[in-house]
View 1: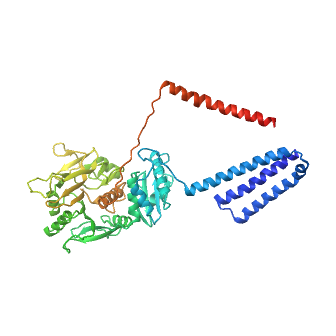
View 2: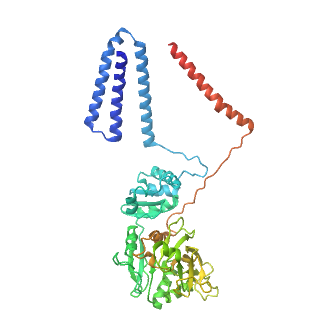
View 3: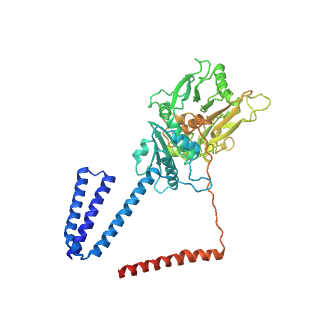
Length: 515
């Protein structure tokens, strides 16, 4: 009985020493308490050795002592080897992707960008508990963090941490925020291309300048946030995403600035001069990017320019009773619940609301030269209202659907237009939306309105500049085996191997019992 208690003292001393080292490594134990624990363990070990020294000298129980001590030393050595190997693999590890398509490897373009990072990047994914897409996010980001120590990522459940979701302005699940040095951007697609381009955007000074046209009653980007029809909240979001944002007067200039990445026309109420329209046309002719948002009932020369290239803002108003019930507005508030497959809206899901919108369409320019464009011009719809909406032809504000005059929805109220001016080699891009109020201070916070606006700007700014990475597809391979081969596999794996292990273990047990 006494010998058994003394043995407990030995194991307890070893446990105290090991525990002190583990606790200090992972939980930052104070050095004084760590050393005190080690000292106590050594004292316990010394007491155990002193009590057992007489037994060792007499040779009594020497074999048991020798065998037990040898086992303990073996365990300690194996543990030490494992710790060293783990340390070496952590600091000097390597990975091999054995898939044929390189499914678990990053592209050379991404690796080059990650190698050149000199700023830390934090990637935050907002996923519900149990979301399938969360696994894909973790798997892909592990590859990024493995390639660069500048990349860190974390997961947040917006339902459990609503304060964090509100701080980042998260309006939908599966949103990913990429940030670095106070600059951030959001993405919705869990793809290598999306992540890499987002990292480039927040870590490099891309010198993107966005000019908002002024002088014709357009939305004011320098208004206060409390001004309902101002664009100050949008401006702040653009600046935070590393864009340079400035107002721009066509009237007091002879051309659009050379550093203009995107020209924005947001809800004019007065007409443009022909000289101003010509400046916009010249800007498009050099491959410019235009975001144009025109409200119902507006007509003027800028619409004539749009029509000349084949882009049409219809003379109508969209009505939607369901949208009115959702947000408590009138029947002329439209809700968009279907989006085009274009990159600007790919993966976009939340509802977006448009207080008063008109439809947008495309008419292929004639080859006779009457219209400025060519057969290469094309239009892709981005924003479609629900099937409960209808189109009030002629801009009538009747609050009910008239089958004899009105057209049943869905209606396209926004799209992207690609074109080339006659005699020009540069292609231009235009995103046209039949409402400007959706991005105003009063409505930008509704559901996905802010995300939609930022997606449109980001696509126009990044088109053709950031990298393109071909999507990798999983390859499914199958193995065909005969009945005989199947029987062999069964016998070896299910019967033979377990029997070998059982026989070997029994033999060792019997042999040790005889010693």
